Length: 239
Figure 1 (spheres, rainbow, N blue to C red):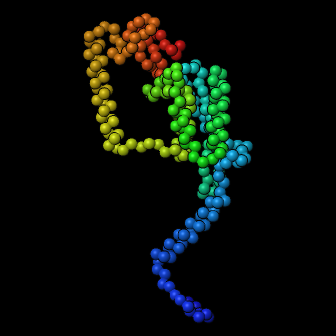
Figure 2 (tube, rainbow, N blue to C red):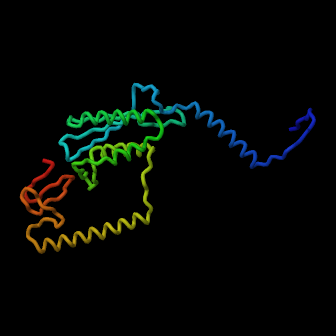
């Protein structure tokens, strides 16, 4: 296809394929940036829709006979587009135990307010998990130690943010995992051998790691299912 030049040529430039590709990518980036400026983002004046997607987490601690239910509702932004994303919008905590009602209500309102402001709110997890109960923490099922009830609420929030992809989990290297597995097997073998030797020397049958019971004064108190329980008299802080 020929093209007739009707004006005087004052200069010329040879454009190669690399420069054409770079110009094309720059143009596409400008268009993408312009499109992103029109996208909806989380902010405190954003109107709450009538329907939100929620997830509820159950917490059962040895400090209370009633479970605690944590519900986190998410806001869907830019629905129906390639930029659709979910952000936590509000949190509610409910329980039959009314002992902690005041500070639980205040905590949920503060967390919800931070989420509605927008931006990165992952710092809330570290702040909550760093709270320690002066009366002492407790063990969850599986041997995980919780320094306080607030810390376990922080763990629930962390689980939710990881499920949404907002927080990234710490992934250990393969060599590190293999090293930890080896050490765990060595510890289990050593503990089992120690227990066998202790039981052959004594007739009480209680684990060597057991501590002294304050009620029957027998060295038979262990942590079982998150509760401090005496294997001799059955005394337990969990009732």
